[in-house]
Image (cartoon, rainbow, N blue to C red; front, top):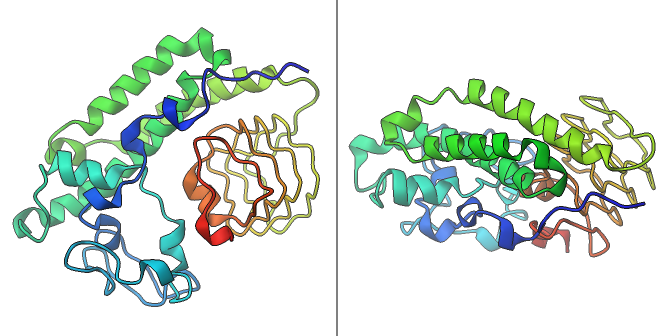
Length: 279
C-alpha cells in the first residue's frame, strides 16, 4: 500500500518560532495562567500571580524536580513558542516586572497568542503534505492571515476573535485531513469526539482513523497503528502509547505527547520530542 507521505515531516520544515524557547520568555506560563491544587499542581494560583517557584531571572526553581514536587502539569504544558513571541516581539523585550503598567495586557495577550501559534502549527503541517495540493493555496492564505494576526500590537492581538478564526481554520484543516486519509487504503474508523476513556485498544488498527476530539484518557493504545490518524484535539492524558506507531499522524502536538505515557518503543513524528519523563 502506498501511503500519502508529505514533503518533510521533520523539524527542518517547521517554523522555528513554533518551538518553545523558555530562555527568551518572561515566564509567562508561570504567571499569566491560573491553576488549582490537584494531581497536576501542588498548590492553587490565580491568573496574573507569579508561581512561587519562579525565579528572578524567569527560570523555574524546581525545573528538574517538577513531577516529584507535585507540578506534573508544568511538564505537560507547551506554548507553541507563544511565550518568546509575546516577550520579545509583541512587547519588545520589556518584561512585566519592568513595565507594571503593561503587565495585565501582556497576560491577556499570551493565551491568545498561544492559540494562534497552535493554529500555525497545524497549518504549517497541512501545507507541507503532498496530498493537500488541491487546497494548498487556501492553506497558504490561511497561514499568512494567521501569521499577520500574531504580528500586531498588543492591542491588536488582544482584539483578535480567536474562536471565529479557529472555526474557519478548522474547516480547512478538516479538508486537508480528508485528502490525506483518502490516500490510505481500506475502511477507516471514525471515532470523532468518541468517549474512549480507559478503553482497551491494544494493537488496534487505527491507520487513517479520525480521532478528532476523542477522549482517550487512560486508554490502552499499546502497539496501536496510529499512522495518518487525525489527532487534532484528542485528549491523550495518561493514554498508554508504549509500542504505538504515531509516525505521520496528523496534527499531533507536543502537548498531547507530554500528557501521554510512552517509552523507547513509541514511534513519534520527527517534529516531536520524546518527553524526558517517559524514562
